[in-house]
Length: 304
Figure 1 (cartoon, rainbow, N blue to C red):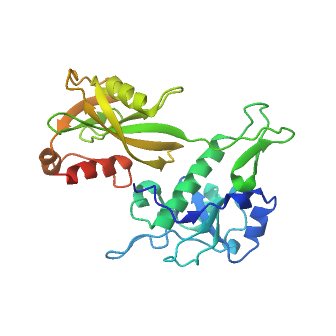
Figure 2 (tube, helix red, strand yellow):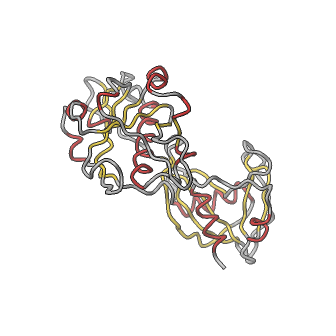
Figure 3 (cartoon, one colour):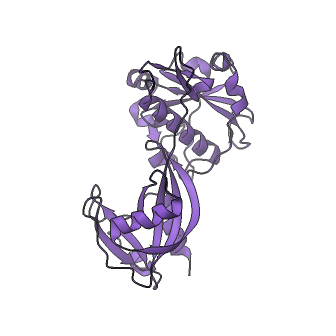
């Protein structure tokens, strides 16, 4: 999956060092990944020919301070400019500091870059954005209401005088390729999208629910179709703001799958597609290459 790739040792043991961030900021060998509103700097904003974009990692002196510092780990890549073992910090910047560092045109996010980045850079950017989003949404203690302060390299938050530690959270969501007896694929159009944009059905896992039960429930709620035999395909993080997408394939129940019935709230239209219809319909908009939905659709399209 496009965003499941990584060449980063998260080096969790080092997070326990109280002065970790200060030590790494003082080490000229450290590299900094600037993050602003879910975006980072691109080394070459306009790649030429077949070149892929790369993240621009900076020396510590390039960023004197940041709103939030996060320890991402150490690079494992042997194909990037930084040698293996290079420590990498993310610096979450304010708008003022970000624009002062580089023009807005040089900043890009996961949706644009994710599928084209190297394994190392894809892993770094997903990790950094997920952590930055968590910090942005967890400012105060849920127990005391006091401001939270970062510890352990940005991986733990705690209020002064309270021993309760707040850890990053990930919300599981299922996404399903539903097939019928004719091997057609079910796609839906969301109420927030253009009318000609279609994707797989998806939804969040509810408390106390298994992944398989979530597949059956979500597909029925959004389409009126009963499915059987959900099979796990793979997963990828989706930090918009804090999800992990769990991909499945399931089959419309041949004993009585029911008629296509969009829920009218999230899903406005549903259609069964053959491979030929998807390939030949030039007006149809499918999910972008960074998404797990597109990876699952492409895998189905490539099968005989």
